[in-house]
Image (cartoon, rainbow, N blue to C red; front, side, top):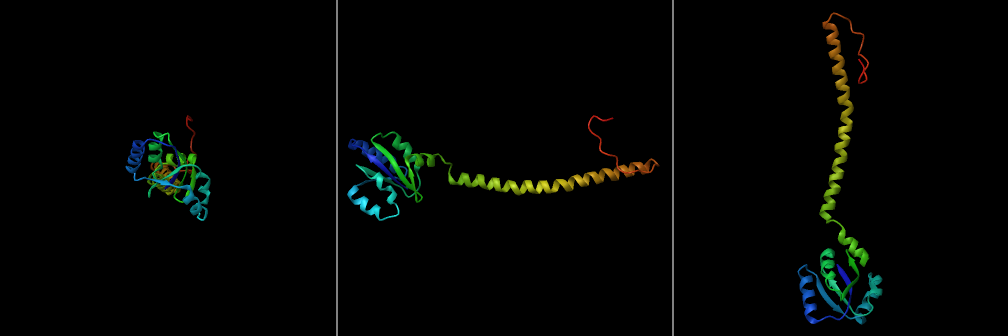
Length: 168
């Protein structure tokens, strides 16, 4: 994750605190010069980040995607404004980073997807067995009716039609 922020002057103690809080989340603060970054970016696949490098900028760099933690720390530092970021090779605006931070963790999403996929075969199996179970119940009922009719000395004329509820 590489986040581009606008940096406004702030006391040295505040910069040290900012670095400390970000480092807790494995996010490093890099001060950059636009004169050096702009030519490099213009020749890379991240050239869409060029408009963000106007004025004084800092980069917040992390090997992991820690967008939620980064936003939480930056909320308390009004001198540092998030402009955009590159997360997992995708360039995002500030709003995109905020939306990304609201997403559930990847493991939770995978678990939900797996649960949904496992439910479908279970429901399909249940639906396929329902017809056979219903047929078996009807045949058992018919056999029982045949036995009851033979035990009373009568001749069965076939299964009785199913009665509606409330019929005598």
